Structures are given as structure tokens and as C-alpha cells.
Image 1 (cartoon, rainbow, N blue to C red):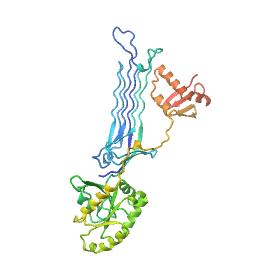
Image 2: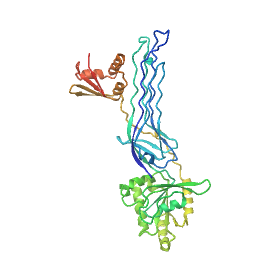
Image 3: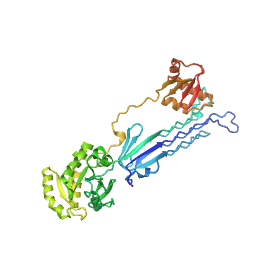
Length: 421
């Protein structure tokens, strides 16, 4: 099944905990600190896989969790880092943050990678805190917390040529005739309910990637008839083959209507080169209408062809002309997302807010909440280090100005601390 839009939850791994440990060996009565660091947590990474053409692997599973880092050991042994979670996606995948609506990445290049959740740093063991004034520190860090996101993945097909036209114009028939694609074909409108990709071999070393876009109707640019879902797949194509149904009541009216929908959805679509193809020439009535339609289109400077997709007649000249136009067009390099000049206002991780509660104060902020999670509260030296962090960030001064008194409770994340002078 073709899936071109999913929402998933991802979470990186938490950093492993550093440990408090002292060297214990025979004839070494006062071994120094040798607590190792925790391992780094695994990150969540999207990576382009050119063999994929759909987001269907995400259809049944919606939660993806990377491995946590392992805790450190004695003898300065670092914990094992968590393995990164690599999620393969097809080229043309857009990654959005559901909560903020921000576009995080546009994955188009082969093996292009996007880290959406970075693994937590491993906590430092007590050997890292040893100094000339503190030779036996009972102080270590827990691992940094994980990151989590709700993401929306959208797929825009990447094809050389897009096949557009009214419902039942013969796009799927043409695609199946020139490629190995097997779209559903039937003699009634809206047979195709999902985009299809196919590769047409014109020569030994010449090929075209074609995308059959489901039939467009009036109002498609506003989402009528799943218009948005279908129209976005045309945006990446470089040439359009516009099929006209020779048996339609008014093929020229259909032609004008679909071009209007393309331009209203994205003005750039109106500037793409178009080859207009009059289909179903195997029928006598259609052959009789062709001269009149051709005259009108060529008067408007459109390049026109007449074909029969069912019989396969007249198809090759259309494909070779599409190929020729592609070679004449300037190449538009697909730029990696990290190279784009995007300006984002980043929050200051050291910033904090203080809110009065009924029995104390609530302190919120990225850095201070992270420090609280990484603190070993059972060790006095770790608790005193956290107090120094409060002072360095200016939180201690701010709490005094807010009128904190001994015995008041300070809430930081999931931790409750009692204030004392």
C-alpha cells in the first residue's frame, strides 16, 4: 500500500550513569577514585534509502525508542554507548515537528541523514571530579535525559516527469504501457487513488522516472478530492505530460481547469514545461476531434501529440521529447537541509522562570531541570554541587528576591527541595 503521510513518536536514549567507586586492590590501602563514565544514549536518525518509495513501514508501528547508554564501571571503565536508531525513509521525505509545526528536514539525497533526537550525554564518574583539594570525591553524575518528539512525515515523490490530467484520461494506462508499474486500471473515473512511480527505459542507458498523479478535479488546490495530498507530488517533477481524454465532453475545458488548479496550488507549477497529449486515438470519434483540438492548442503555443495508450501508438516520441526537454533544463541541485540558510531563534538553555506555589516556589528551565535529573542526591558532595549550579545560574539570587524563606519547598522538575540558609 502507498503511504505518503504518517505521524510517529520518537525518543532518543538516556545517557548512562557515572558511578562513585574507589580502587580496591591488595596492598593498596588507599586506592583513588576510579568510577567510570556512563555511555552516551543512542540518537534517532532518519536516513534516505533509495530502494524505498513509500512510508508504509511506519504504518503499523508509531513509537520508536533508541537504546539508553550503560552505566560506568570501576577501574575507569566507561559504559557502553546506546546504539543509534536508524530509520530508513524514501527520498522526498519531509520531517515536521507536530507540536511546533517546524520543518526539521527535507530528505532528498541518497544516504542523507537527519538527527531528530540526540542521545543524552553519559554522566561523569567520580574519577573525573578528583582534584588536588578533593582526592576522594563522592560525586558523580547521572546520565543526561533523552529527547523526544512527535513527528509528521510527508512524502513528495521525486520523478523526472509527472503525468497529470482529468480522471480517466488514461494516465495509469500510459504508465503501465511504458514501465513495469502495475497501477489499477478500469474504465471509470478515480480508478487511481494513490500516486504511482515507474521507470521507462528509452535506451540502454537512457531512462525516465514517471509519476502518475491521480486525476485532479475543480477545487483540488483547496483540498477537494484529496487535492493537497496529490498535488504535492507534482512539485518535484521537472516536466509535465498533460493527458487529455479524447472521449471527454470538453477536453479543452478540462485542460484549462487543471492548469488553473496547478497554478493556484503552487505558482511554480504553472512555469513547468508541459507536453500536451491527446489520448485514445484508437477510437474513430477521437481521431475526428483531434485536428480541431490540435489547432486550438498549437495556437496557444503548446507542444501537442496524439497517442493511444492502450495500443501503445505514438507513445515513444512523447517520451523522447520529454527526455530532450529534461536535458535542456538547468539542473536544480537538491541541497542538504543543514546547508540551507534558515534562521531560527534558539531558546537560551540557561534561562529560567520562577513561579510562586502555595508552599514554596516552582523553578523551570532547561539547564536547571537537566542538572536536577543528573544529580546523585544521596551524596552530599553532589547536592552541594547542585547548589553551586543554582548560584551560577542566578536562581539563588532570584529566589531570595522573590521572598523565599527557610523551610519553603522548591520544586524543580520532579524534585522537591527544602530551602535552608
